[in-house]
Amino acid sequence: MSSISIIGTGNMARTIGARALAGGNTVEIMGRDQAKAADLAEALGRGTTTGAWGTAPAGDIVIVALLYDGVVPAVTHYGDALAGKVIVDISNPFNATFDGLAHREETSIAQEAAKAAPASATVVKAFNTVFRHVLEKGRPDVFLAGDDARAKARVETFVESLGLRPWDVGGLKMAHWLEGAGVLTVGLANNGVGTLDFALSVTALRAGRQ
Amino acid sequence: MSSISIIGTGNMARTIGARALAGGNTVEIMGRDQAKAADLAEALGRGTTTGAWGTAPAGDIVIVALLYDGVVPAVTHYGDALAGKVIVDISNPFNATFDGLAHREETSIAQEAAKAAPASATVVKAFNTVFRHVLEKGRPDVFLAGDDARAKARVETFVESLGLRPWDVGGLKMAHWLEGAGVLTVGLANNGVGTLDFALSVTALRAGRQ
Image (cartoon, rainbow over all chains, first blue to last red; front, top):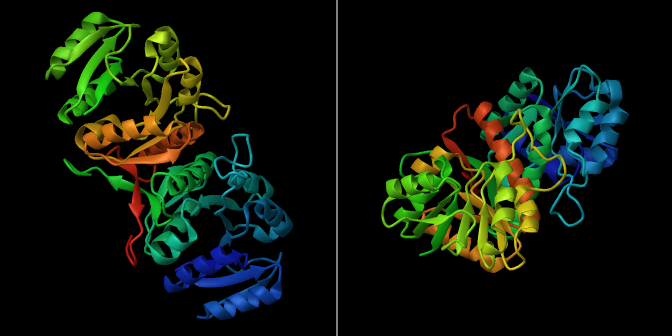
């Protein structure tokens, strides 16, 4: 069981919150709009609490479920309130045409969030290759990247509580390529796959048939 | 059935050549070292031919199976001999630590090869997320990117002749993110997966269990 705080009150916050509760975790919702946070907490039920925007989250794992350009500002605003926390960045910084990243440099929202976070906090990139409705209805693989092995282990435990397979891709600099995998996922949806009903995954080699 | 020319005489040339022949395609091997090309052609058997380095390939699809830093020089050297061909770039331009790309700019070997190729040729990126031994023994998904729909369709037909699923991720600029997916594949092998016996794949959403 993990204690989760979710910063955000949108669709992704709702979906992750619902799955987290179903997996036996505790959930706190933190919204800039306190009324929206209260509404979402009530909709989620099962003891979901709310916390005031910018104050210390109740959860050990803090999932930032905001549009990508809100992530670093939120982490900066929370500041020392995030001390000791595992911050999970799930964002996709798509460019305007959804075929590249908004930042041209070889960085990621996760790496930028890590620069903005307190030294005692750690950032893990996760969930960004998963379309929301797939997370709602299916069992997609979850890729994660981060520099702190213990923080990743805690996120892996949380991912497993959702009935999903976590796949560690390496250090936080790999978050750049996970964000690129988000771009590929959209490219697949618009081209070869032709629907949103899939997820990028790891398939084990089996002799003859994989 | 496709007619395939493979530029290169290494392990990847051998593996792709063997699978191509098993799939009922014709194969020509082109090596800078003519003796090596002849040896590989003989080892592959089934009517495999050889062609002289830098001359017009017999195949409609030309797979460049060289280390990444040899791809653009080879395409440049071949020059007009590649007119009208579908050039397939399978390379992974890893950096020295295998956790990023050798080029820092948002480009790809495939895009650079396209600049070096004749105007009537088209470049398709494919196969780069697949470890060689997985291609040899398993049935990995094959991701591909390119700007020309007909060229991609021809590569897809070839991929399907190998018993593999081709997945179009979009235009050639997506080759950059496919190269990034190559980096992720190595990251997965070294971290969460812990073996080389897997491939990145597309998994369809199924209700309840994906």
